[in-house]
Each structure stands twice: as structure tokens, then as C-alpha cells.
Image (cartoon, rainbow, N blue to C red; front, side, top):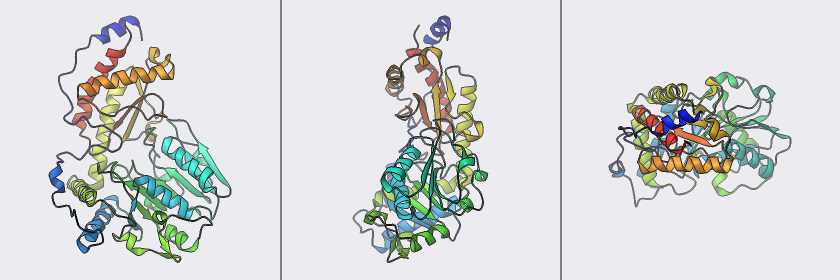
Length: 394
């Protein structure tokens, strides 16, 4: 960027319109439009989660989630501890080891699953296929006769699988899919997956600590026929004496859930139904991506981290800063400069928590899931230009 251009940009006045909701965090994510604490007034606080009314509420979360996501009837769906992380770990520790494993790692969380598989679980013949932030690994190198562990949408990279055809319709191994930032915003090819996990606090904007796991019949068969040589903590156990614990998939949780969080999840699911279910949720998220795309195409200081349009996430909107003066800075100075920019936005109550993930290239990460209004994305964009000019050297 030329000095004259930097000077002219540095005198931009603050925009007049602010987002109505400045919460653009990628987790926990923005509450659904119109949310207030009053939606929790009927929560069964003080009741046992084993009581019939509480179990009915928990099962309702399962039923509504299944219906909205289009999960096949023969699949089991359950609520599990420790958010999406707990759900993924439950699948990895319970199922891996029967056959070789291929892990796809292309951002922070998928890299964590790769570490856990290679360094902690240590199955025989495990391989990791890695890619830098902004790209997917080489899918043609994957052996789908192996168990395959993948993240459908890279929450910290903004890269997602381009479609169902990325996975063979017929595969011998299990496909274990972390879908926490894709569920309720993207189509998931259930017929090509075997284990799918997500959490309430991503695309639903729910509260933390609860995860969900969906199991295909093939995954259930693995659970009841394969006994790993390692011990399993209680919170990972989905079988007892090689028999599936059916209650887990009917509202009998392994540990005590928050019934406030359950009530909040039900509110989010009912709202999702009111905007047209998955079709409506996808439309809202795609509108957010379209608004950001239009701005990026006219802005010279940012680019999408995801280089391929067809692999660009509509929820994790990840941008890298490409202004020449910024790219010449060492990473530590880039981070300091970005922090100054984001502090300005927070002081103006315009945007909270939009820094790139700590391991990702220095830039911005804006949540674009369905609970975020497109009008708020549109109101945010001029403020990003304004804040960037405030930290641009003259």
C-alpha cells in the first residue's frame, strides 16, 4: 500500500451504523435473534435429570435435532459430556484400533485429533494427512478402507469439505466426522458418514459443556463387537458388557447435564424450526458469507484464508491481512497491531472476539452462522475498514 493511500485511509470517520449485536465469536456463538433470559423461565431447575419431565426434555433435544438435521431414522443420537470435544474423544477412544487409521489435519482442532490418535491412542498403522491453513489435505491419498477421522468444517481455518462426493459412497472403514461448526449450517452427507459430533454452542448459539453424537448402524456394530485394549473412562462408555446402552440415546445422559442449558437448546431448536429448519439456517449462513465476499472483493487489505471458493466456509469466516506493510511485520508485531485494531472495535461496541485463532495466520475470524443477522455483518464491514486505517502507518 502506498503512503498516499495509507494517509487517505487514515482519516476515515467512524461509520454511523453499528451492528445491533456485536457478538461475532466463533464459540460460544451469538444467541439467536430475539433471545432473552426469559426463555429459560420454564427450565426444570432443582429437578433431577433422571426425573421423567427432565428426561423428556433431554429426549426432545434429541428428537428435534434429528428432525432438523435430517439424520436417518436408523441412526442413534445422544447427548454426551464435554461439548464437541467430549463427543469426538468418546468416538476415538471407543472405536479406533480395529483397523488402520487415516487422520486429516488442516487446522487447529483437526490437528488436535491427529495428536490424540498418534500420541495418545496409538493404534497400529495410523497416518496423518496435513495441509496448511487455507487448504484441505490431498483427499486422493486417503485409504477409505481405513478408519478416517476428519473435520467437516475447519473452525479455525474457514475451510470446509466441498461436498458429499469428497467421501466415497462405499467405504470399509468408519468415517468419524467432527461437524461442530457445520451442523445446522451445512448439508452433511449422512449416508457417507458413520460418526458425527457437534455441540450446542456453535451454530445454535447455545450454552457450553454439552456435546452430541450420532452413530450409524455400522458405528454401532463396531461398538458392540470391538473391545479396545485400553481402558475407557466412564464418560466415554457407550456399551455395557458389549451391549449398547440404549438409554444414552433416549435422554439418559452419562453425567449430570445443566437443565438451564437444555432449556436453552430447546429454545434454539424451536427457533431453527421457525426459520425453515435446515434450509432456512443454510440460507441465513450463506447470506452472511455472500455479504462478506462482496466486501472482500472490493477491499485491498484482506483476503479469505481459504483459497478455493468451493472450500470456503459459510460459518467460520476467516480472513488474512494482506496489506504489504502488515505482511512485512514479524508475527509478534502483527499480533500487536491486530490487537490494537480489535481493541478499537471493542471500545466502540462494534465487534467482540473476532481475532484469528491463536495458531492460525494473523487475521480476522468472524462467525457467520445462522444466529448472526446479515444486517449485522453488513454494519460491521465499514467499521473494519475504519479500524484498519487507525493502525495503518501514515
